Structure formats: C-alpha cells, structure tokens
Amino acid sequence: MVVGISNLPAEVIQQFGQENGITFPLLRDTWSVYSQYYIPGGISPYPRDFIIDQNGIIQYANNEYDGATMELIVQQLLGEECEPGNVNEDDNIDVLDIVNIVDWILEDTDLSVSQLCSGDADGNGQVDVLDIVIIVGWIMQN
Ligand SMILES: [Ca+2]
Ligand SMILES: [Ca+2]
Image (cartoon, rainbow, N blue to C red; front, side, top):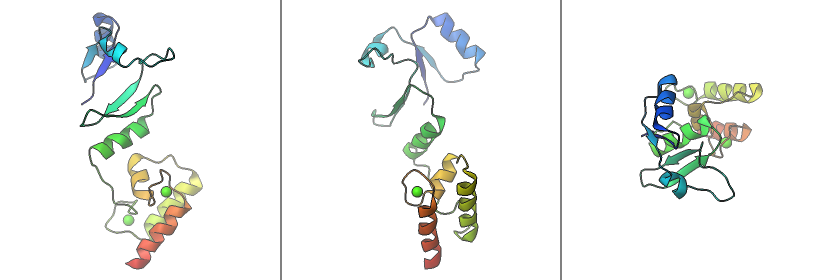
C-alpha cells in the first residue's frame, strides 16, 4: 500500500494530488507523524521515502528519490522472483544470456530491476564479469 503524508494544509494537499494525478491516499499530518519520525540534526522527515515491510519494520528510508532501489526492495518484499542467469527470460540458461550480459557490461547499460535480478548471479548488487563466470559454470553443469 502506498500513502503520501504531508503537513501542508488540506487544500494544498488536495490540489497537489489533482494536479499530479495521484491515485494513492494523501494523508494530512497534524505534526504527530513529523514528531515521531523527527531526525536529529535539523533534518526534516519531508520529503522522505520510507518502505515499511509487512511486519512494520522500516526497510528503506531516503530523502532523495531512488526509484530503482525502491522497486527492487518492494519486489523482494513481495517475493517476486527472477530466474538467475536467464537474463533474456526464454526457456533456458545458455550462451545467449552470456551475450546479453557482455553487451550490458560493454555498453555500460543502466539495468532494469529484472535485468539486475537475473544477471547478478553472485548477488552482490552489480552485474560484471564474475557473474559471467558463475553463469558459464551453470551452463557447463547442464
Ligand atoms: Ca536464457
Ligand atoms: Ca554480481
């Protein structure tokens, strides 16, 4: 569930939602949220992105928008899976997947969440030649 929280006047929040076509609930904070999420050092909690998991634990907080990381965390929390090594999402892991990864590396491609998920064979958060070595190993075993 996505909610927006602001401490601006209700009319301003409503107008912002209409102007930006926001379909998720926009809540007005009467300073109670602000005071609970106050961060020492004069850093305002707004604007700030939080991802709170199913158990109420904060999994992500950032005062700069980082859509790719947020999407990855939400996918992980929702248990959406990819098939590691099968980066072109066909029926098997083979040399075509390696070719794709080599292209990404050579062209320094900004990877989508699903590309990163399937290409990052060692799970270190990036796709590089070490992942190719691992995936080649998987291909050799089959
Ligand atoms: Ca494949
Ligand atoms: Ca990797």
